Amino acid sequence: MNASPAHPPHNRVALVTGAGSGIGRACANALLINGWRVVYSGRRLDTLQAAIASAGDPFGDIAERALAVPTDVTDPASVAALFATLQQRFGRLDLLFNNAGSGAPAVPLEELPYDTWRQVLDTNLTGAFLCTQQAFRLMKQQSPRGGRIVNNGSISAYAPRPHSVAYTASKHGVTGLTKTAALDGRHFDIAVGQLDIGNAQTDMTVRMRQGVPQADGSVRPEPVMDVRHVADALLTMANLPLEANVQFMTVMATKMPYVGRG
Image (cartoon, rainbow, N blue to C red; front, top):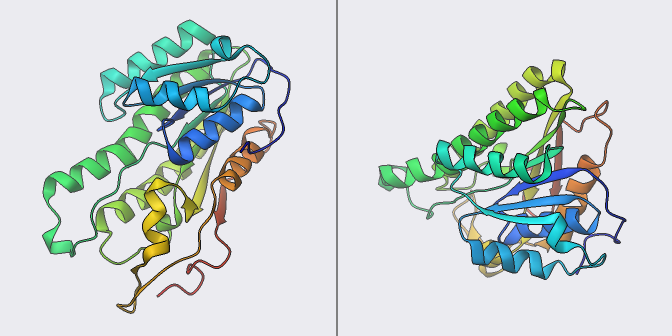
């Protein structure tokens, strides 16, 4: 189901990382249907192509406006190649949605393997930094200058779940990246904000309905919301003029435990 009605194509260009599934796919498809030219980035080409196909083709020009680019956001060379391909194909970038992310099994802090810690931090934080760095370089020199960057923060950027040290630390780091990039981008017409998401219904949140650990030690199911609402929230941020910025937006299942968590 589409996040919003189709709008005629325009010249603005968006890049969505982690676009092959879940929140990334929903947001990339919503942008495409909203008229944007969209680069779908993720690890697997076949998954990205399937995501593009799932958007439909309301204007009969999907081959011209959508581009799948396999990328490892933890690899500086792969990220540089992604932006080179984007610039060659579309010439500019108006929106970057840093969405690619990784989680870790819920285990006691002292039992978390170092390699798992590194994987989560490298994907969620370093990956967002590398893409932001490349976006800054392009947005500063393109004409018209500037653009918008939105980071996927998560409720965990504010309130942790039990046994989530790597994911929570990475998302707190994303908040620091958002604030610093917003400050550094201000003089170059680069608006940077953060979308903090709670319990959007995707393959990754199936366990929410089955029951997840709570701060009091119990295990309880949690409400979820349709992922379309995340896409709608991103569109609200993306379609603002650069003179306005949503610094932080929280979109969440209304009845999930967040306010008063713990």
